[in-house]
Length: 384
Ligand code: SAH
Image 1 (cartoon, helix red, strand yellow):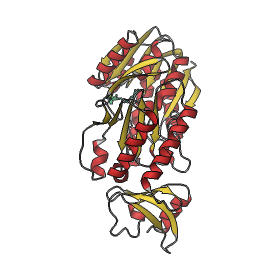
Image 2 (cartoon, helix red, strand yellow):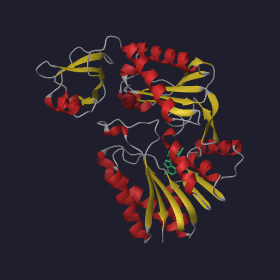
Image 3 (spheres, rainbow, N blue to C red):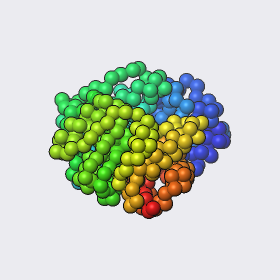
Image 4 (cartoon, rainbow, N blue to C red):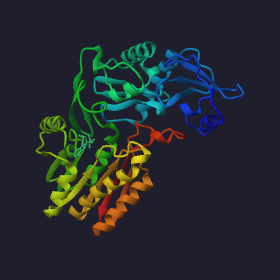
């Protein structure tokens, strides 16, 4: 049973109800499918329940649902169908983006012939859900391997038993995938998140369209931007603090016959040193990890973004390109633009916004659920 505030949230198009807005949830098993009612007993739809998360319920249907596995199957087919419309000329994409594909708590990615599954809630981690997901994917896409990717922190929050990344079906965990004509190694059991940052796929191509001269890719991970820039730039340097990420980046460069300089280090220190030393670039990409994990850390996060952008702007030549990203949901587009504008004022640079971009179309944004829109990627030209 949900209180008036919870009902209002659902009426506004959201699909979550927080634990503080539950009136009662007595005797409901972890991960159960539940019928949601308001305080007068009126039906509000069907949801998945979590006994541990602050997000106590996630709606899955406005009416009754007879068979949860059948619903999962139907929605998987729809999600695969949607990708056929919006994803082309690549063998890699996000197949299921949780709430935005009406499968809250489930992420599925395709890396060529390897699929990865990540269950983020008790309901999606249940045996019934997992079996349906694996069998539907196998039947629809005939992958050479299906791998489970584990986000340890989320499993802990959901009070799910700890697990390692593992092969669930087939025999292949490693492969090579291609996006925008650039090839990448994929290691299903290693790496951060689900293995690659697929939300940037369309932004890589956009950035490459403006990139020129000497380029710096800051927070490069396995070289997503750097490898795309290499086709358009005379010289590319990638910076990251993770050695394993840079080792993969180097293998990716070799796979594409590119020469890229990889530097292991703290991006803040390196940008400070390079800008003080008067280094100059024509293209700089900034793609840091999420600085604001909650609203409380917003101010610190904005200071971090400002510092990075300020240093980068000081190093860009006139006519240069700044590709600057934020994947913090709590940092809104307006906040982010304002922060870059403040950095430009301090750096005494005039900027023109060429493109205001977000996540790739295989990460759709569900209207009414603002949390599904998180990535900002702004491309600026330094006009003076
Ligand atoms: N641009 C990448 C994704 C970046 S994810 C792509 O398109 O694939 C953020 C990256 O920042 C991670 O690889 C992480 O290792 C790195 N990182 C985190 N803190 C850092 C720091 N202080 N200095 C340098 N790199 C850092």
